[in-house]
Length: 315
Length: 289
Image: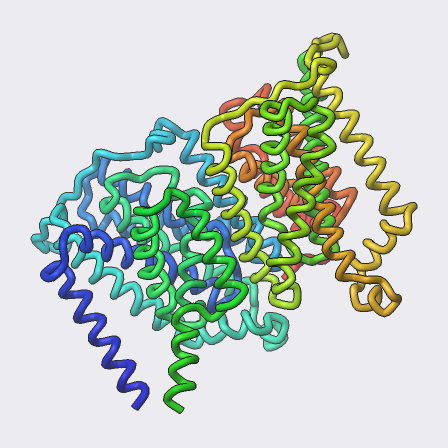
């Protein structure tokens, strides 16, 4: 009964998401595009945080390098969009392998500090390497050509771009979900709960952590590749730690214990941001207060709290 | 030769300043077992409070050096009693998240109160000149930073090794339950240590104010630097913090002079090298997962 209700809700949400461009204004098409992209970014982060128990403060490095990769390929090579996204994923995976190799072998505290420091290192590179990254101005002025696979899509049209993003994010989310549900995903969960026991069971915790870190980085790179044409710019802000704070917040806001939590968190985050920034410029202040309250009082997030409440009522 | 002398002195003043800040981070970690992400924000708050006391209230630099850190320490007591007390018994991730939230709040408050522009604090008259040393002219203020840094270093060493308060702090760091069983009020120790860490950060902030321009990003820069210091030196180690700070000071002092193109990257390269060969830091013990 409960699963049926949940399935029905999920089907309704998906149908609603597909219908967005036909019923909503341009403004909301942009909002929903952003929600989907940042949702994927947050979901990739939650693979290492919610599932594996590693709190990274440098996840924006992979998001940012993904956006720079797509921008660079569009400017210099003018490849189809799908190829750009693959380059973004590849670049992010390589970076995640290097940073992960140095960071995952130490405990949680070190991991948090190292990911923050290495994330800021990537930011510093993007800021200083003007000949390639155009420094603080970022890369702009690229145009989307074809999509690839022989599909004839006008990507410059926001509605079309929204549907492309929806399709890619849906596929990526399904892949991520299957990873979480697989035996590999179960081992990641076990590592979060008790790494010592997992290593006594004969599994190399460090390798599992590194693989999870690289997978998460790869999907963050994909989200970055999607955001560059959306923002029409790849700038160092996408690499800054305040960008790393966003998936953390979204995951906490939605609920780290659920696969869909980060997506719910992304929706709440973007809608709140849109709403609050019309009143005040101090969005980060509100963000900090929300994060503090969520951590102290609602550690399970919106989805977790809602599900707890529902279970209580429907007993 | 004179270039090397100047670079050396420059390294020393950066290094000792970093030591003051990083040792606060280290002490808080040792006793509370949390990494305070807001440590850099407290440093920045110290600098901005000093700016207000000196440039707006017209106080002398010395008064600001005494008052601003006390103000920040009082704020730290409030933060500890109002927010952090909820998460001491929880998973370490929660403390990272909460101090990160505090960092966001302080950063944005600074931006709102003082604006995002750059502010400048003048060094006191007495220290604004320069002196001839090791064959080159050195800013008197940077010698002052070195002297204060060494005094604080000696003071901290004395505090931890020769006084009752220091022994209580070390006992609480080693085994909090045992300390409590020996009639030590560990709640008071925890709050006190957090405030002391914040005080050190703010002292660093006031000292840095006349050397660097004040902008709302200064806290972020210093927290990254402090992380690099404790990763190089070893988390929770007092000599490690000193060694890490001096190494990073040397990287800045000589890197800025001889390798200006890559100087932003050098600290990270240094950190990566230490991680490859000594994952727990040069003086650290047992941090492997």
